[in-house]
Each structure stands twice: as structure tokens, then as C-alpha cells.
Image (tube, rainbow, N blue to C red; front, side, top):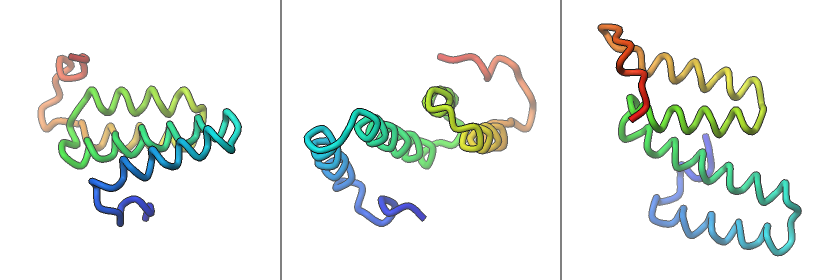
Length: 98
């Protein structure tokens, strides 16, 4: 389980901001990028908790992971997306971005 899953949602934004500020002050560019990606992942996961069939969030999340280049993480995310998005009646029109 992720640590932020146990933190009240209203406090997570503040934690991310403090963490990002710390990394900007004391870290290197790659650590700053890591914080930003973590925040975006968290936001995507929160949106998917609300609606696991939100195509736009899945596409954005996949694009984020593809830009990071971690094959296992990308593969796992595609599998999750396909499992969540596969409708009972397959319709190609659902796979278009809005």
C-alpha cells in the first residue's frame, strides 16, 4: 500500500507541495521530475477511484508512464486499463478521446 493512501485527501496536496519545494531547493532535476510524476500518478489514481472507465484519465496516465519509460509499469497499467475499460458490448467509438 502507498503511504498517501493513509493520508486524508485534503492533506495530500499540501504534502506534495512541500515535497516539491524541498526537492527544488535541495534536489536534482531528476528528483524534481520524480516528485511531479508521483503527484500526477496520485491524481490519476484518485480520478480512477471515482470512475474506473474514465478513458481520458487512462490515456493521460498511460502517456505519463510511457514518457517515463518503465516497461513493467507501463505493461501493468495497460493491463489494468484494458480490464477496467472493456465494455460488455465492445464498441470502438468508446476508445476515442473526448
